[in-house]
Amino acid sequence: MRKNTQTLLFLLALICPMVSMAQSVQQSTGLTGQTKNYISTGMPILLIAPDAVSAGLGDAGVAYEPNAYSAHWNNAKYAFIDQKFGFSTTYTPWLKNLGIGDMKLLYLGGFSRINDRSAFGGSITYFSLGEINSTDGEGNSLGTFKPNEFAIDATYSLKISDNLSLGATGRFIRSDLTNGMDVNDGSGYTTTKPANSVAADIGLYYENKIDKSQEFALGAFISNLGAKLSYSDDDNDKEFLPANLRIGGRYSNEIDNFNKVNLVLDFNKLLVPTPPITDGGVTYSDYYANRLEYNNTGVMQGAIQSFYDAPGGMREELQEIQISAGAEYWYNDFLAVRAGYFYENANKGGRQYFTIGTGIRYNKLGLDVAYLIPTTKIGNNPLTNTLRISLSIDFANEK
Image (cartoon, rainbow, N blue to C red; front, side, top):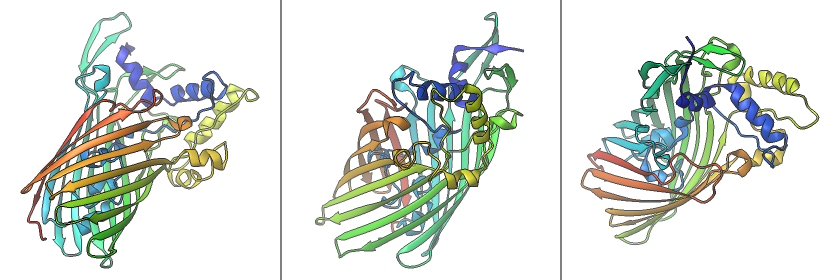
């Protein structure tokens, strides 16, 4: 049965390559006034900061101090964590700036030290699009459903030297956006289904003391490398997961017994091939053929060619790198104040925003909040003007 609802238009933009294809043609033919070539993936929520700590630092975290959220930023950091075991959870309202009250992102994670050199962890990420009323072509109600996505992780981290560690994560992913509805993909109605996938992360973390009060750390993390998502039986409609490479560093300075400063910097790049574009000399049918070839690119092949396949050459490749930078001040290991900035090139989405945050640690409990302030009207982040709250509990601090 054919079903429609206004909210499904939003879902179609997420799951139908034909929609992205039409947008790319419009953008690259000058109808938007500027050549743009966005990289879209399935389940982009896998890249959203799950914690208010790094969210207050401009979404930087690959080399930030090991904590309960390390599985998302760099799983290798677990091997350096001081606590014996701990838990963390975060609540993030979604599209609150648009007045939508029932969409949310929830995160629950935990870790445990095995011994002095190894640790394991696990987490669940759950994204709810709220409740959607479905109607037929005549506006008759067909009931309601609750589209959602979730990912379940298991992580192991091991020190291979006193200063260096490795991490590995396995992940199960499920995305159910349409409840099996028939949706229009631009060429007719297609029966949809939930998309399932598995993925893996691998991380590398290094930290060392400069002297008694200063420390630096470096990190590299590849995440979400796994099978494509398929929302229908059409093999040409499979979507890449948001496979991602993140590298960065941290500098920490304990000024005295009461004051400490952390500076962090991350560089981030999707390991997903750049979509083809067209100009006035290329027909839509030629573009469609190129798009089909793009959709049939393998995961590993796509990750490799993502470093050199941009139609605009090296200049466009550099535009695909996102930059996150942040600063954090701690007073007496009790109160933290954070600020950061996130930059994405306008031709690759245009998300640019400041972040601010604060945190409190008391005994075993930690409470953190973060707030996002956009600096441009294009590429608006769904978390604009949204307050994120994280709670963590750490046990048996060995220090």
